[in-house]
Image (cartoon, rainbow, N blue to C red; front, side, top):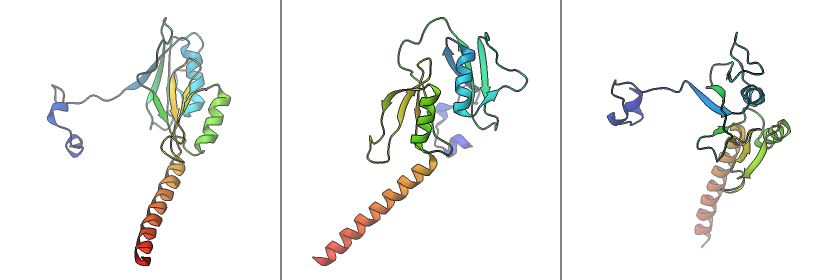
Length: 171
């Protein structure tokens, strides 16, 4: 039913009539334990209950304690990261403004890859960062910042429309 309500065609349905779901995200890395430890405070995640990650583990899973977010599995691979990620995480701060979250991420060891703030005008944009192993991710505006930006844009549009009306009546 959901597929139909979203406008998906029958071409999207697999041969069994089912569609797969994402079990978890997997990140290839050099040190699964260190990278899982780095990401836990960034996402507010924890080790799998009853299965703690430890130094030397070549696979380390972290989970959202609320159960709302996807699990993330870090797996050690022998080869280093060689190019830009084809898939990356876009992180939205839960409460803090983007700039505060960015400052915390930088203090935690992230590095700036590209600053795209203001790309589409004042109050817009994101910052591309890299974790300690060079995996890119983006920090977006918080929900409160998005709401304020939308309200300001709506007010500006209303002001422009009122200005056009009043200037038209003055003519």
